[in-house]
Length: 224
Image (cartoon, rainbow, N blue to C red):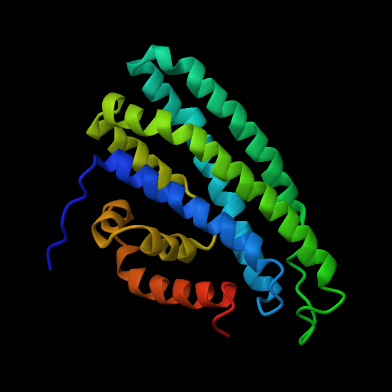
């Protein structure tokens, strides 16, 4: 079966999809944190995925993507510097989210019990702060970044950047990225994003998708 090619350049498609993953995943963590049917280990996995991936994402923008854009369009430097300042606010919110002691778990049958409530409340508050920061930041970033990717980053330059991002992505709950991508993108868009995966990883995609589906059902309180 041949998939229809996405209508926009790969840089725009891939960036938009990753941003949508960040929107959906941060919202899910804030909602799931206080759902007593969602076990703490599942919340810890999503939290760790978000902290690692959001940090990596904005660091690669600051350190690699912004200099590429500025080299082609020097007038954008001030606007991109402002976005980097927002990344610093996000980093502070991620520090607070990472500090919530979720990983210790809870006794069997204690989900929703008194001992879990303070942890869940703390996680919800920290996750909501990250969600709000991410959503507000992307509302500022996308109107600047998506046109800049189209106009100032060559296909070869984007491919080099994207390969470097994939090579340095933290190996934290990668199945969740696959699952979220499937939710926010068309099959052709998702294939474009995943095409850069190392060849040994590609045969694992069906298993990663199944794992992600199970995890997301648990996080949404619809599976055991």
